Length: 256
Image (cartoon, rainbow, N blue to C red; front, side, top):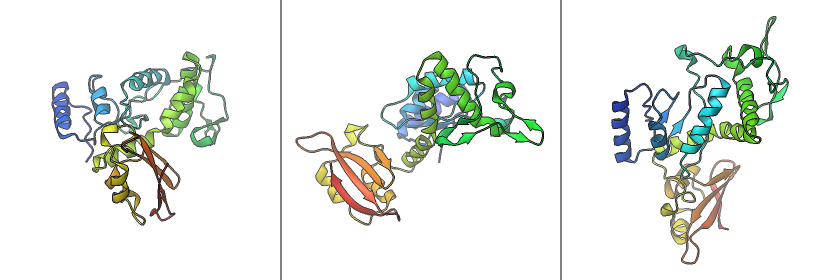
């Protein structure tokens, strides 16, 4: 179960997060930041996930900067957005077509997808002039975030795009922890098992889920390879590489 304290009173939310603290439960999310700023660092400290209210792109970049500062280094971090469109929440206003850094079409969106202006009948949409007029303009809005962030500080456009791209993985990792999987031991040294113990817990044929139940979340998962951290008498950080078949079964375990 995922607990969302948005829309609770300040006292009720603080009390609920106290219980989350006592339980050490990781399944907590603020889905559209309808809360107070004191709760956000606490949600991150529990290994939770936050999708701030989207709104206009300039305001969201400010929220992103605050959340980067609140993020807990013990957990993989990414960010998403909460449109609240189904709740008739106001969507992002346009910054205008006369700004010095407008979104130019076509552009490369997340994942390298080429995005041009959307057209419905004779209606052509432009994020610079229309803002987020409908759900389909959120890729354009994310591109606008990069323009705003990079204008404020060179290089931050790429950073906010990366953090948005990491959001889905951060959300899924929160789900894994809520299901009882321990956080990764590379970011959490106190959770590291000995190399011998890891070797006794893992074996060929195990599923990805069984591996994580045994040794926690991987620090890195790329394709068919997961990497975990263990320890030995001579080395406090030993990387263990686990490879999987296309069917998701362990094919190899190697200390690197």
